[in-house]
Image (tube, rainbow, N blue to C red; front, side, top):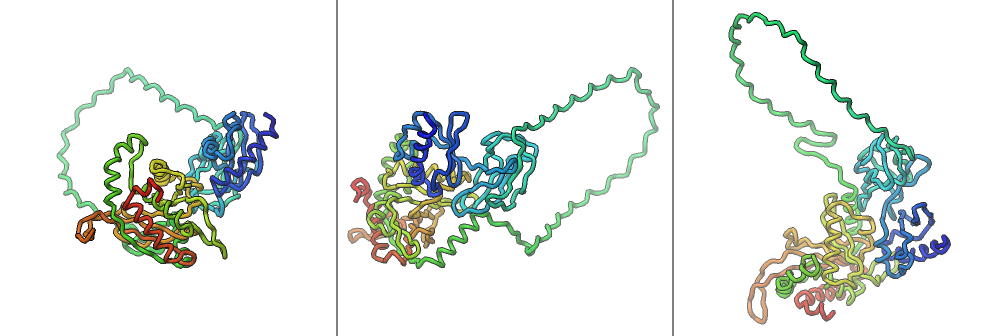
Amino acid sequence: MRSSQLVKQVQGLSNAFRGYSSTVRSVSSVAFNTNNSVSVNTYNSTFNYSTSQSFITASPLNTQSSLNMIQKRYYSTSEGDVIKVPTMGDSISEGTIVSWNKKVGDSVKVDDVVCSIETDKVTIDINAQDSGVITELFAKESDNVFVGKPLYKIKKGAVADTPKAAEAPKAAEAPKAAAPKAEAPKAAEAPKAAPKAAEAPKTAAAPAPGPGEKVGERRVKMTRIRQRTAQRLKDSQNTAAMLTTFNEVDMSALMELRNKYKDDFAEKHGVKLGFMSAFVKASTIALQDQPIVNASIDDADIVYHDNINVSVAVAAPRGLLVPVIRNTQNMGFADIEKELGRLSGLARTDSLAIEDSMGGTFTISNGGVYGSMFGTPIINPPQSAILGMHAVKDRAVVVNGQVVVRPIMYLALTYDHRIIDGREAVTFLKKIKDVIEDPRRLLLNL
């Protein structure tokens, strides 16, 4: 295939990629490699596409089939042998070195992970773009680094000297022929005085307080993700006119449905059937019914989103993360459970990509898994609403004039009163309640 034709097709796919990730703006350049592949440089990273027939014939509209062929890597930009900190995403200008996987004198190959940088959103592995030997590191672990600044230096094409195998220890010298002279036995020594009674072990002295610390306390620096989360939550409180409305939902029908079909569901789809997929699907139906809840504010405009992308709050080792389940309006229970499992696993192993946490239009936070009975969640900006799920508890309720015990969950919807009125918020939450209490509505999309 001629180069011009391939360039045209690659550029034609850029719009499809832009729909997949909000950080991909456009194709900036195309370079052809000697290994029959083409490297497409976008706004924030380099994507490698194979020139196989399956890629060439992929439709720009079928983004998933095309994206499955992409291997995302964050490569440093270089100037000679000096490798610079790469662009890591929109609005990200700096990060913190979490760890160096390579040290001075180590050989690296293309795609080897040289170091990991923690940003405000995720931790990113920085891959080597050339083979060679690391000759200098311009930052230490825990140092802040800035996009476009020197990161490390490499001698391209070089190979590290293999340390010589440790010389085998010299053969043990043969014992001298002459036997050691027999010494006359010394006179028996007088027995030594009995050892002193063992002294009681000394109590270890408490470490001296560090700078700014008091006795009995210690300070630990917050991770970048934790700092960013704290800032965003406080900004949300200061900006949005937040109001929370509540309702309760009888979980009997959903629990009966789950208990009846969970084994068949797991056998067919390979994932467990949980409550979260039902609430994501119920929220999707309610968002379609009340599109203002899926909207956001941009200056003096209200931005309505055609797609429903549900962010799910996940507690990760470095802080709270909100990976996004995209286009839930096109997904079934199994699709949601699989994607939720994948994203949760990536979040807990600190392996999320920046794109996995961007583009959400509505958030669900399930404090019930930790036993929370009641709470008022904080909106995740620039979104306009967040649903809080809580623990399921047996409670006395009145049904048809009779007091009965039912498994009840309290629901909380915090919304931005600047664009969402009370009628829409209450109607939205009531819709979720109705769908969960009668799951047949999910089947009929009611």
